[in-house]
Each structure stands twice: as structure tokens, then as C-alpha cells.
Image 1 (cartoon, rainbow, N blue to C red):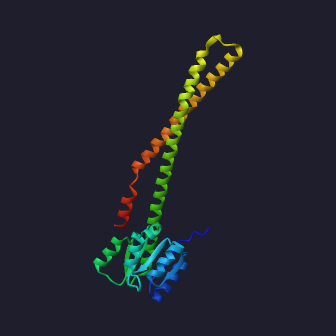
Image 2: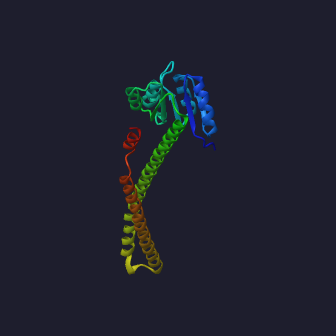
Image 3: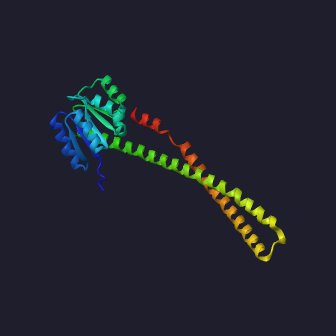
Length: 231
């Protein structure tokens, strides 16, 4: 299984594409390249990169337009969480703020230092992995809660008829024949044992459910976490 992180490079300057391609490939990343925003969107659908390095000033679609489409378009909804590092020769604070507000995870001004770019790439990828781990953990908690609820319902549905069986068996009393009395005694023992096991299962599942609820209370809500990581 290929575990390389996939990076999509988007820039209309061929020299920048070739530079990043060579440097990042040597560092173990898988690379795809696009020379304009429209081509980048097509590659996103086909390849689903782990990160996009996106130049802002490009023909056909600017980096801002590509970011807006990826983050807000229903067509690209499944790709909206792909992190974006935007490049631009424009050093105006307003431009940086606009890029970040559109959903870019970082904004680097040209000319850039490759060591700094690499450090930011790694930070963004680590951050995204952290968010992914929390999402998977929340999903496991949700599934555990659903299973616990179904088991508890099942336990409740069995408990009442078992108790009724115990009562009915006990009501037959000593007037029964030996065979019937033996059956009654076994039924009462089996019912009592089953009820005891159901009570133990009920207790165990309730404990797991309480633990899951406790974990949920300790976690930062994902929307809040994502917003804080970007801002």
C-alpha cells in the first residue's frame, strides 16, 4: 500500500513546478502538477491529494477562485477538507486575510525559502492528521453508543418474558408430576441464571456508554477545533 503523502502543485510558472517537483519527490512525497486552476480542479477529482500548494495569480481560475470552489461548491464537497497552502507575490495583509478567510490553511509570500515552505507543509499535514484522528475517534464513539443502546433495548426486551417464565413455572407448584416438576425446576434455574447474566450485561454496557459520554465531554468540538487551527 502506497503511504506517500500526495501533494498537488498548481502554478503557471513551469520553473516553480519543476523545482517543487524535484525537491518534494526527493523527500518522499508523491507529486502531481497543474498549470492552471481548471486543470487543478480536474486533478483533485481524479487524484484527491493530501495537500494543495496553490499559486494565487494564474490564468483561467485564480488561486482564490479555486479555493472558493473547493471549500463551498456542492460539486466538490467531498474534497473540501483538503488543506491548501497558497502562494502569492502580493504581500498585502488584505490579500492574506482574504485567502485565509476563503479556507486556505496557510499563505506564503514569494519569493520563498524552501526550508520554510517544507516546514509549513509538514505542520499543515500533521494538523490535518490530528483532525482526522479526532474525527475517527468521534465516529467510533458514535458507533459504540448506537451499539450500547441496541444491546440495552435487547436486554430489556428479554428480561420481562424471563421473569414471567420464572413466575409461571413457580406457580405450577408441588401438584405436578415428577417429570413436570423437574422441568419446572430446570426452567426456573435457567431463567434465574439468564436474568443474572442479563443484569451483568446491562451493567457492563451501561458502563461503556457512560465512558463514551465522558470522552465526548472531554473533547473539543470539531468545528471549533478546525476554526482555531485555521485562525
